[in-house]
Amino acid sequence: MYTVHRIKDMRSNDRPRERLEQQGSQALSNPELLAILLGTGVQGQSAIQLAQELLREYGGLAGLHRADYQDLVKTRGIGPAKAAQLCAAVELGRRLAVSVPDDRPAIQSPEQAAELVMYEMGALKQEHLRVLLLDTRNQLIRITEVYQGSLNTSLIRVGEIFRDAVRENAASVIVAHNHPSGDPSPSPEDVTVTRAMIDAGRLLDIEVLDHIVIGTGRFVSLKSKGLGFDPESSVSAL
Image (cartoon, helix red, strand yellow):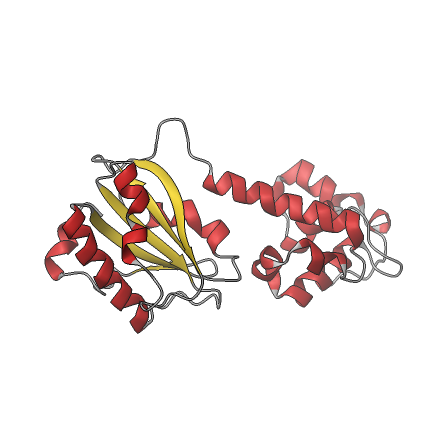
């Protein structure tokens, strides 16, 4: 814990900006990186102490990731300017995470698929279902969102999952949805929906390569777990 109330009272080698310059951003702790974004603290607290309090209040980086502007602006010591800075940083991270290079990436593993959606979907407060559309070489065509809300077979129209895949002439798809609880453990409902999607895909000649459940900082591949997929499908492209 830091006992000083102003960063400028710290030794120069201990100040976050100086440490970043000398050692690189990877050497800084989460509170130190956050303190650089905040810029200043409040009366009786340095920017680092304010950052520590902010992380405690929101349950770490994952909770801060989920916070929106209205949440942040009401937090002691933040206000409109700091709230805007934090939201902008999170949004830049989201855009970087979902950016696709000019040469479209080929998805060869569940890890590669999860990397494309996990940063953003891991912070969503409701369940969202997205579909990665792939061509015959498993190259990403685009990612489309087809559903928002509780993942329930009585509400989901499986045909909607393949609507954009048919339009884009996709050869296969990877389905991803998030658990707002942060726990990516598949539910029985997830397995049931997976089987329904696989059956519908066979009718359309569009293979469902995987169904990935996104949690906070981690994911589960239903195919890797053998949930909803036929055993012989384990030798498929993923």
